[in-house]
Amino acid sequence: MQLTMLGVGSSGGTPMIGCACTTCTSSHPRNQRTRCSSLITLATGQHILIDTGPDLRQQALREKLTHVDAVLYTHTHADHLHGIDDLRGFCQRQRAQIPLYGSTTTCKHIAEKFGYALREPSDFWDLPVLKTHAVETPFSLFGQTITPIPIKHGHSDIYGYRISDFAYLTDVSAIPETSMSLLRGLKVLLLDCLRPTPHFTHINVEQSLRYASLIGAATTYLIHMTHELEYCALSAQLPNNVLVGYDGLKISLV
Image 1: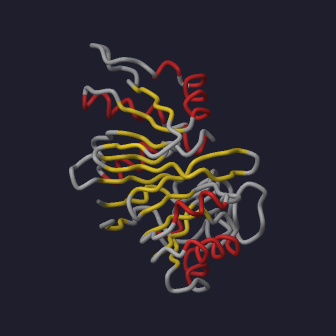
Image 2 (image 1 turned 90 degrees about the vertical axis):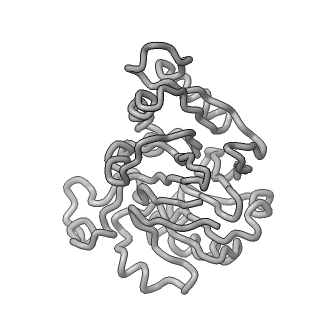
Image 3 (image 1 turned 45 degrees about the horizontal axis):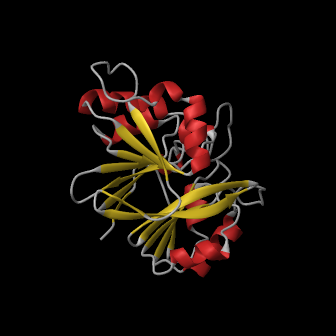
């Protein structure tokens, strides 16, 4: 199983439009961040997306991604959902409906905003052909157990996900104690890390490092970063088992 970080940026991406800060003007490729999303490639060949941000098309072209078998949604903010229409290209190639998984609230929101895409297969493939599946407990997908991890994102209740010894937690403001128990024994953790200073709906660098220590994954990668975090400067201040994620990073998940 392989993980590909499609994007590790926050809602504005990096560089930010109109910004001339050190990170936004950097020539270092790891400071170029598209909106947050990841891809899981199973040993059996299936591809599972985590979220469909507005940069999905760009990310898919970069990674030469030609098929998608399912999508796990963390929540429905625009930077995690609004690339959903780009699933159309995969539906057209595959001539197959793509299942979407998320909370009941997430599935309801998708139906309200993107109802045209929730369709059964037919001879017409000019629109996405998708189907939502509300999940609350661990479920099986392509032979893998997927565990939703309830977390807080400001006032919102959203999901992270655990698959085997890997977990993905973006847009975190707090992790309930009941969810901490679902994160024991991880080898790889992708964890929200918005910026240096506190934020109401996201953990900052200090809080991310505290959660990384509490969860105790063998390796933690920081994701969903704003332009306030420059790759080299942030890397220099982290412990050995915490690394800065970057677009295109591939990790083997055994």
